[in-house]
Amino acid sequence: MSYYIHAAKFFLPSNAENGGYLEVTDEGNFGQYFPESQKPTGKIVEKAGQWIAPGLVDTHIHGLLGHDVMDNDWAGIQDMSQGLLKAGVTSWLPTTLTGSFDQLNAVCETIGNHAGEEKGAKIQGIYFEGPFFTVKHKGAQNPKYFMDPSYDKYEKWQSSAKGLLKKIAIAPERDGAVEFTRRVSQDGTVVALGHSDATFEQAQACVEAGATVFTHTFNGMSGLNHRAPGMVGAAMFLQRVDDELICDGHHIRPEVANILIREKGPEHVALITDCMRAGMMPDGDYVLGEFPVYVRDGMARLKDGDSLAGSILKLNEAIKNVVDWNCVTPQDAVLMGSYVPAKSSGIADQCGQILPGRAADYIVLNDDMSLAETYLDGQERYNAAE
Image 1 (cartoon, helix red, strand yellow):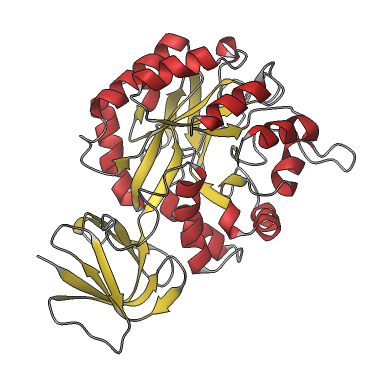
Image 2 (spheres, rainbow, N blue to C red):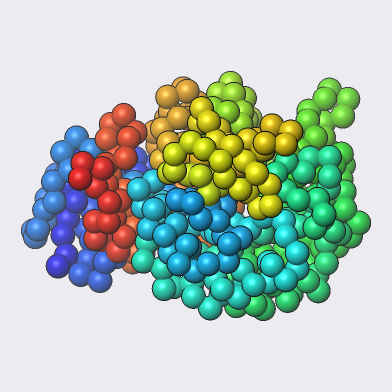
């Protein structure tokens, strides 16, 4: 049955509107928005004092609830998709770690064969974080699998994924990176740059060849120096590129998030989680890829070397954090957690905005940016009060 949501605020594509009514059709799609003065006839669902936003889009997430995408277990991915609803996420890209060709190919086959069967947050594609990285900024990636970019390997993975490989991250200083970027981006797959010690010039060469995203900006990349701008300088300076950002308060300081957002504008900063399998789980010992990890004080760290190993951040926490840190308005925070990640990953035609005819995947926020409810196809799937 169709209904109209009556709420205090709606985050629409071009503007945030105070009050009004948003139609959800019998088919579970968004319909028309009506201002407060034009109350429609039909069933009204009251969300007094609350805000309606598009469902969040997590485009860089490795694990959740004890599962990891690299486990290559469809039941585990199903659990992740259900759990993501508790974080306000309605669309996502299961994200791999660096692994062998065969490991990655098996993950592609599993997701390619089953995508669309998930019962929770919708799989909109796959993100390959690696394996074309370099050692100096390896982070929690296993360097024994690092290699130069190979278009032939990419084509085989894409075939196994049935075209669902939407984004792949590479280090610009690897041999063949520019040519790989040119060919892959012409295919319509997003090329991201990360886990790299590249110079500004090497990063720029890949951007000029078609790369459009920087992977978890500031983390796992050569820093900004006044005579050697590096990867961070490229991420901050180059135009028409989007920068991923992990806003958990551990990967970067709030002041650094503020600097990047002011420099690039919210429309070019994509909030991500980089969450690993300990997300929504208790503190303790875990594994990321082949590395032992411990989780404590809101952080996941490698036992050997103590560097950060992904996060346990939820995307609804990230949009709240950037507002609490006085980086952005709620409207821009929502943009950075929905449309920008979708746009930066080439899936904005499927998710990230409230538009007529789109699936009614939306969240209800309280005025302190805390998550109240999550809806898929117009149906309530999570309620924080229950």
